[in-house]
Length: 285
Image 1 (cartoon, helix red, strand yellow):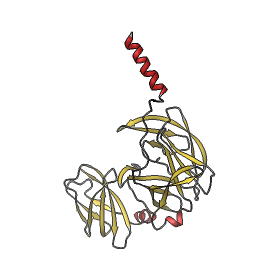
Image 2 (cartoon, helix red, strand yellow; image 1 turned 135 degrees about the vertical axis):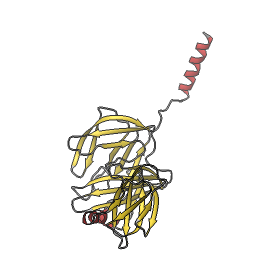
Image 3 (spheres, one colour; image 1 turned 90 degrees about the vertical axis):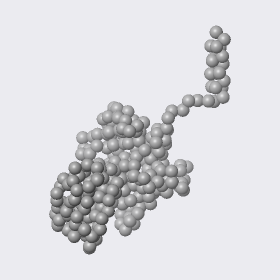
Image 4 (cartoon, helix red, strand yellow; image 1 turned 90 degrees about the horizontal axis):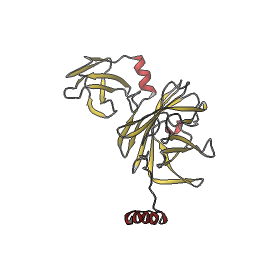
């Protein structure tokens, strides 16, 4: 009886002192120092990739809220992105917001990890705002993954804990009729995501056009020891694994030694002497 009274007294003291149990927080979308997003825009007249670098060291206060600011990089960044990138997160709910200074007076919710099966999410893109439904919730490598569907979506919208959504930036943009995808994401220089649908961290208009004009062949494919590149004179060849990681680079050769590489599918990015870029898939067995 005395023990029960003692436990009750301790509980009352903890409650009186304001001690509460807190739910576990979701993984942050941002690295400790920096975050980089490689965003691919697919339009009728252009295909480009813009890296967006988010510096976590400085916050920008807008309407009483603190935001991380993203800066587009590359030669086409100034031409393409007239708007600015401001993000903030709530790790308690796994919600990620973006503020659009050119279009909205308030922020837009672009990711929500607190969703469960049967919930709906308001998806906003260049065509308008739609309701999408949570189809499934799973856990992969200890991280929560949410799949959302809608009858007009020809690709699944996926939320993964600690990673920006695969449809990006999920909000109003200057160019209409375009699809935007997250190709790869990096935290503090380490790759944490690669879009398996594209299996490439950088796609541009030149590489796609040239691939249509000139066929690159690999022989043999699959390969065990060496592979020959035909149809182009390589100045540099990069091999990327299925995670998008660079595993090998060679220069000024048609022949690549793949002996010792783990079995799987690799992506070759081939740059010729004129700077044109070609891509080809290689199976190593």
